[in-house]
Length: 350
Image (tube, rainbow, N blue to C red):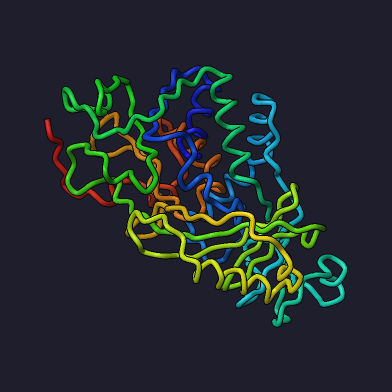
């Protein structure tokens, strides 16, 4: 999602873009994601919140563009999110408000939370799988070249700058290299020590259930579980947060805990059929912030480490990275996301 969003943004101003993918585009964390555009979350660190605000501000236009270019619908839903809250509404989002029992009954009659501390947040959601299909189609329609089943092993360096990438085959040359490899970003050798892209996999298990009638319109989020309705009649339920390396196996006990937590909020889900279970690997970082910007190796950039918010942050990341790639100044707050925060006095391997 991050790499293709940047490719789309670059192509809009005529840049020649090659995307090199170790498998198939979007088949890792992007397709495993829930698709909540959770920009109101008060737990977001300030640099991430600023990036989220930027993303939300351009999301509708981003979706319109890729739907138009691809001819595909991404199921962008704007009903909002009902939150079983642990504190007051987010102070930075004026639209967040307390939700009374009468209004809850009118909005979501099947929702039966034990808590009365409920809030309505003006967040949207999107189907990441449909979004990825549309984004791939849009990029290809506009001339982005995509090479699949080709793992990048390292960055080619000549004359003290990045001049391409190494693969198991012959590799590719290019004037600029951007590492958007998610949880695998840290495995790409660029000759810098320590790595400017120290990402790690953070596992999330999820399931989807099929419902016979519309049980929910809003996204529902509690400390234990979230529920995301889709327009095609199923509900996504997630998600665990596990430090389990690159393991993507699902465990029946974990899936059942999520299902029971969802039933506790919406009792009628006990009758729902489990449609699918899966696990994805989010790209975490040591300080829980994304990594955006140029490294100390000229010509080599990183856009990774978005953890649980890659779908939300992708359009904003593309805008910021496009500015950085053009050598333009970005807002001061985004300096906290620079990959150089991990590399002090780094030397470049020739």
